[in-house]
Length: 300
Ligand code: PPS
Image 1 (cartoon, rainbow, N blue to C red):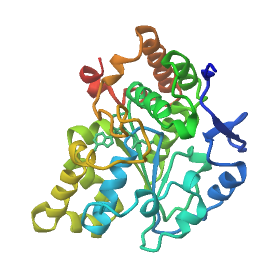
Image 2: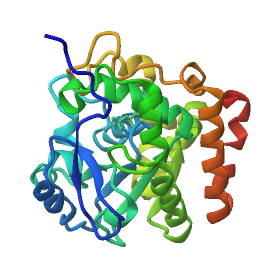
Image 3: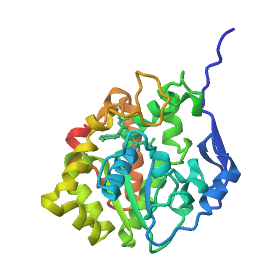
Image 4: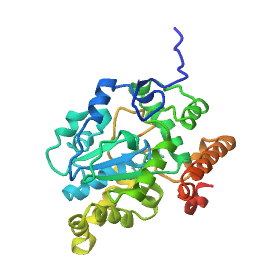
């Protein structure tokens, strides 16, 4: 029998007052699960890692856990248990984290994210073109979630550019968190590309944002822990571990981890459409469209 090729990944669609129409989330979640997740009451001290998918979440999760425990994740420890994904792993997984401060991953738009002025929110953003390329391979590779193993980039690009993928629109997500980082002292905005060029500087900035005790801890004994965190979260070292299995061997979760890989996937016209979206975002949120200018050479 001939296998049916899907033109769309499989998603669950949920509603939320902050979005027009429906919002796509991975198919393992239901509207009830989603509603329960976003009803989580953020506590003082909670650390939220707020990312659009494929922008460096797993990297920074490992770094934050490294700062918390002073060591890398052990082989028998599960990232999703120690640092649960709110809307995917559910509210119980978050409540079950006993060692405080709780660290919580989310891809939710700002208006959906549980808010507490005494929680901390770290947003990691990446240039949209590399994010889009990574998101395609993510969706093709997680067959049990999306059933999109035969997906074509040209089709998926149309979903990405119109915000119809799971976790919504890249530009809605990234602009709103950027604006909040300017307005609220408990929101920090970090670029994936800055992490690539200066992991020491950026992880120190994250530690300082979390508070003096974190900064003191990572810089003690001549930056001992900071150096260790940079080392064990290098792409090479993190690649020793199988994140979020099962995935096809040729599409590991830690795929390339570079700046500018989009050139191998997006056409000139797709690239120009992303540039156009950036320009529009800049008109609405002046400065946002300039965030990646310093990496223009790498991104060309
Ligand atoms: S997810 O599924 O949303 O949690 O994915 P996320 O972790 O945000 O993003 C995965 C991409 O980040 C790259 N990555 C890294 N790059 C550099 N250094 C390190 N240590 C690192 N860890 C993860 C990973 O390779 C994915 O990007 P691509 O471009 O697909 O390689």
